[in-house]
Amino acid sequence: MPRHFLMCRPDHFAVEYAINPWMHPEAGSDRDLAIRQWEGLKAVYESLGHQVSLIDPIEGLPDMVFAANGALVVGGRVFGASFAFPQRVPEGPAYLRWFAERGFETLEPAHVNEGEGDFLTLDDVILAGTGFRTDLAAHHQAQEFLGRPVVSLTLVDPRFYHLDTALFPLDGRNVAYYPGAFSAGSREVLRRLFPDAVLATALDAEVLGLNAVSDGSHVVINSEAGDLQLELKRRGYEVIPVELSELRKAGGGPKCCTLEIRGETA
Image: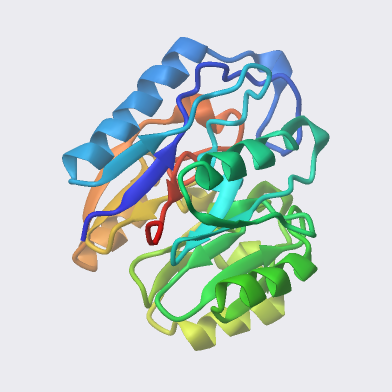
């Protein structure tokens, strides 16, 4: 089934500050290359029949390209983001305004959360990360607003500061994840919920191989995650590698650039 994605062209992309272990401003960044790589990702989605909408980038917000962090959209309801670091705080209202202007029911968050960076939606549950960027109280607010069970998972490795760097839904009922990113209790929860999950290696996790997007048949994934690609192919998925090396300098991959719009306005 075709999906609807919201993306933001990286016209103002730069690595100007360090708010995660991937970011090294002294190393520099190439905005033109970032744009070309982002356009390649967008073209892949469109070639698969998915709809891509665009939000206008805002000067001074170099991380706005990471649209997944801007909100959580389920059943046409939009739970807004409230960023943990001041450099990104203006992104939350910008994304919420985009949805409000198009008739979506929106909710301003009462607690820090970073949208689909830490909320990943399956058929029956929403998996929610905490530990670095999203307050546990935001999980409760999302559950009340969206009417979906929310399962809280604790992240323990600062390299995997968002849930979407350590786990992605393969379809509505199964996931791929890197066990080392999670607390012992959360690993047990994942084992019980998803006994047939794809388990990624540390090497694949370290190239953000789990910051991937699956439509249930195709998996768009960072090209360097070789072992994970082989396992996904063995499971019957069509794997589509993409090159997003420039955006990875800010800690981003395919999923970070992609906010899914689930359900349209009434």
